[in-house]
Length: 443
Image (tube, rainbow, N blue to C red; front, side, top):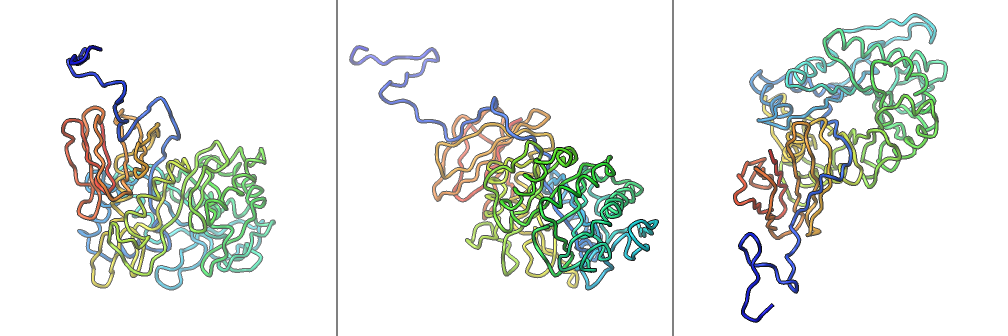
């Protein structure tokens, strides 16, 4: 090139000097790289938490349901996890009602099921969720009835007696049939919750090998529902349950979704299976009701946004189910309900989850995405309708400018001052604010 002469591109713009290459964009997408398909995002309201909601005036009930399930006003959640009861109701918001509270006379005796059509108000919430478009209902048992176990109690661990396996499988399937009569199709069925943890409330132990054996009893009976297993107490611990099922061809045949919690250990890698996986229960430790986005407490909204990102990217999960949608007192649920004062409060945890759940719809596929700045946690998805969703969590303390945002886009900002606040994208440029979750939707 002659001195004083500037090279011009075909677009009429100065060419980039080979000694000074253009910096990489802040975010790079590669839709040719396809990861997991998404089943959805959800909550549980087990252990009679729905009764807190029912205690509120109708107007506030509707506001909370909107916050959970509405795609314009709230999170647009698409999975509802239901608790299958195992004991008569005890203290308020503690136990769930069983469909067979008394021993029918032995494992081979005709069952004596009881159904009240309410199921601790879970039927009501399930019907409301269905009106919002929810189609994924995950019913999960914390324990078999006490008389089916070696400790004679639905609480305090204990294990399922081998002679009661078939009766317990029939009990679980009967629960799904009662819901079908109410117009709710249970799509996913779990028989154990935290089988590696003994709790003072409803709980039951399974080793990975015992879980695989029970799957082979339940699977042929539960033909109209997908069996899920095993809701281990931690994600690393869940790997042993998944491995045991995958190692048994007959058990592997029946388990459609592998599930794990993240109390004992966080999501750090995929579970060892080619089947769908869900992070099916978690909330962070905390000693108070906290509505903050980013206060360093480790149970704020920022913490939830980071945990969802890690589950989707490190764990390649297809589903993410939070515990709980709402509760009372010093809860880490998404909402706090005061059933005495008849009020409720919304945490930033709700909006952290909503930034994903409202826009990433069932059937979406996670696609390739990367960031030039290591402070940016990035994930990207293509929805069935062709829209694209790019989630960028800026964990740093400086703003980052993303130039070249693809297509016609809108950014939704969630931080201390915003809760999914829409911001038009001008000039295909987005400013990724520090300590902020920015959801970019390209239509």
